[in-house]
Length: 268
Image 1 (tube, helix red, strand yellow):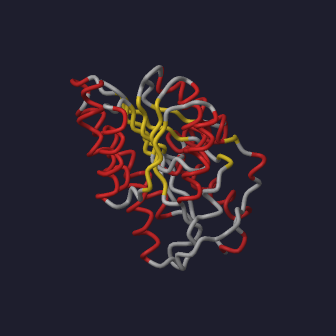
Image 2: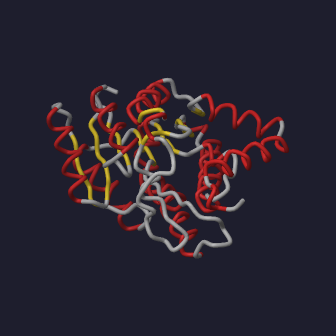
Image 3: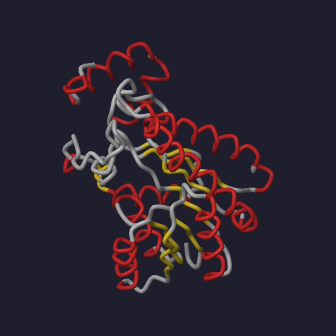
């Protein structure tokens, strides 16, 4: 990572912030985006305290012009772009029958189109560097989860997009990684959209029992260095992917049972 330039979307909290610090410690110059000025400043201060060259960019990757600006500012500041990490994302917690359609649209706009926009504008620079394009996806991109229809759809779309792009870029030697952390301690569930589009405000899970964002960032750095195709983390995540591939009918029943227990108010 020495002197590599990495752009991380959604780099102000959770996995994004941990990844900015991890790649910076490994020698990279780090640009990162976020929508919240205060959180941008907090992450910038952490990077500055470690002596890591960095650039904070206020941008909403779901807005095409913002994604274009983020790439342009990164290249203007550091002269190149080696690695794009599409991390920005939002989740939801509502049954489809109850959810406003705008909730689905918001998730697709940020999670899927945010990845498309940032990748489109970064592609010429990453191709020139024979670098890496990373999608921070989810087990929900392999296995649809009840109460997360929009989230699952956006991650399935990300998978299809990056898999096709990986194949297109084989002759150019560009590395494409799909990373699926499984359930990770972060604020994504706190800000997940409820049926009416408002942030739910609290997590339904025991965050302390999950893999930490810092641990995920360590695995992510190693996967980029090794130019891996896929990264699936946590034993639960690996088991879910395996069962869904080999025994999909059983996976349906087990997932339903799990979410009935976790989400009793859904009346599944």
